Figure 1: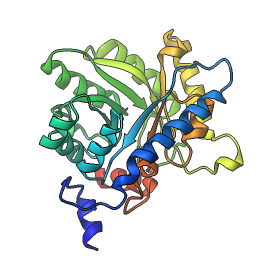
Figure 2: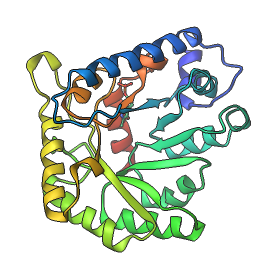
Figure 3: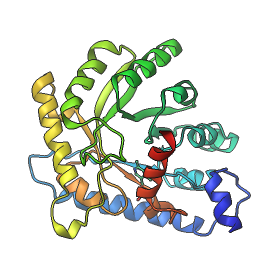
Figure 4: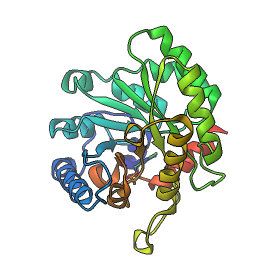
Length: 275
Ligand SMILES: *Cc1c(COP(=O)(O)O)cnc(C)c1O
């Protein structure tokens, strides 16, 4: 019980003795190999660039982040604002991980925007899901000056009530809004979480929907398909996601070990808690 509640708090402390710290390096290498193998199975019309791996470190201590960084990992994902901010400002992370790039992948409430944007080394917000949120993020980021913030628009491809994200038809409108009305934001792609899908049952309909959504977006907004990233695929299906065209996959438990609760539940927990 003690271990679980410590992890749940997400309090990153080097003093927590973690099982599996030794396995992070090998697990990371294996995931990268599986991504490379999946890329080589892609249809020839898909770009050959290696997809980005975002290591999802939620509920795991900073020692796990540092260990993965030591093995070459640079992109990390978190889905709670508080947890990302704490890890990003941890003195151990600051000194050991100077080139770390944080991705926010959870539901973002407007009230938490300033807090999130204050995080050191924030690289991307993958979960813009309304024009109002985009406005808020843009104006808050604009006050910081400097480069535009990379953002993705989250699409609710499965149209499930419990999940956040724009419906497919609204995606074009919000992206247009970001491009025309949010001068501090740099639209880089589309993100989906999707419903549970058994890869042995064939193509994941959520991945297919995101691909169709990108086509639609590109056609309406006159963008190149190569310029619009797709963030899709997690531990249980990242290879399939890469095969069909993901440019960024978000993998947690396969690298860091199981969490006290499964990914989908974590996602729902976030959604539920925010209402
Ligand atoms: C937790 C989470 C992941 C990673 O899930 P795993 O199954 O552990 O790989 C990916 N994306 C989002 C949005 C998440 O919340």
